[in-house]
Length: 321
Ligand code: BTN
Image (cartoon, rainbow, N blue to C red; front, side, top):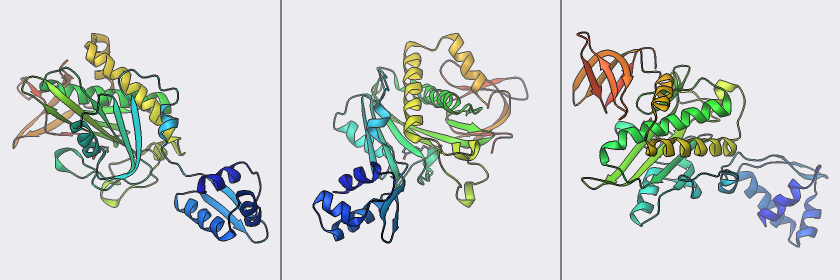
């Protein structure tokens, strides 16, 4: 009934009275009123004026799997797309599906995560307006390639942001996308593997899209596309663009990044050329980030000119949050 009422409201320019709706759809006016309220709860803005009736003034900005898949044309990512209203964590949901044999290419997105996970055991706040999703891949690769897979994913998201918005998005090694020194996107990659080969990889991506503000504790270091552009963006359209770019990046990565692609990657990496401080297993190293290896490690030159390869842990970059 909700959908039928919505269809009438969408097809009407002005107001439709409760009586008209109840006659058209063969239900009581109380049923109409209850369904109008249910639509309002889903985020539809419906004006009601005495003696005139109801008018749809704004539709909710909801992710829609069909819209996202329209014109996608990807080969690896998005063979199946699902949008959930609420889930603990899209990574955990995909992990459960993977255990049940789900094939490569699945994408699960959620409007809300109750237990969104960030790197290094942190929580990822998943307020409405973002795009939170996880991609399941089953590449025939050794487990050591996981870091490079995350980098390839970050590269794909970075290119999508640049293509869709024109913003100067950059990669903060290993897995953040930043705009103007503030974080726009984070990536959490998890995997299940045998000693010599990956069984499955979960690439969990959270992008701040239509957020108008952030909680006090992260306000100084987080940004959203809306805050940067000064306007809302169509999350479905943008999501399609992200999946397309991820697909291209994944295909290029699996075929082996060409020197040209690696160069483009390094150009987009905000970390290279800056002073960094990295901590891993309680050991801190200070130096200058001078490059990224083909395997995705960060090359850090210490004060003696010695190059260290960093492949995980925490990296603080001078000048970036
Ligand atoms: C980080 O920057 O620390 C990584 C954040 C990753 C967040 C995304 S949101 C979708 C997916 N599900 C999760 O629980 N985490 C990732």
